[in-house]
Length: 272
Image 1 (cartoon, rainbow, N blue to C red):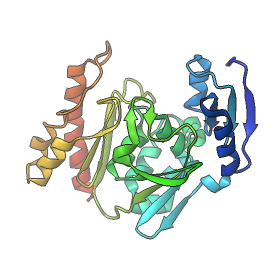
Image 2: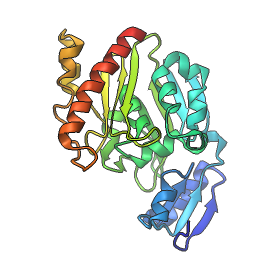
Image 3: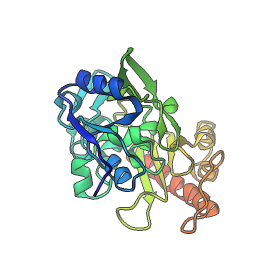
């Protein structure tokens, strides 16, 4: 990779990183695992004047119990989430999804916070967190604020995280003993999902069916009204706007959403 000329700064603390963002504004980018930022820099789709490395901030790593919620540090690696006993017990959907992202190299370097803030509608973890009703904790010059997952994803590669803010942690309600499921269709084993579905209890989130991860609201309402899984799943693509591409047309993606939703809901029934 030969990026454009830039300055590199290793942050010593969250406050240090925030100070750099405040000073440089849109010209600064945060570097965590690097799996989102570095490809963009390689293609010159991003050319920050300064890269602020937060990868060593241990205060943003790890998973902890907080009563009725499990708290994920923004720098928790996918590999760590997949093997965390607390997460496996109380939010098994997230542990499973973290374990099927990319390949071992990606899972050992990629972070949950980086995946979420990047806002790729084809990513797995944002949809899983949406299905789990997660809450994102952002810290900036005005202090700390919380944003619900339903309000966090604003558009393709766009989130509620402002340029001078930093995602510090993700709070996920415990779903102990409830059903869950996850299915995705890929062209090759480690590709981004053509379409994917994450289910937590009766919450259904769709991957790559719009410019953001989104809930299959019509399906959820049908289930709440007592509709059989097969009938509710037929409604999964309503209200979506999937892309039309040579390798996956809009009609094909809609078909996949309906099929995968039925499979995932049946998984959740078996595991609940």
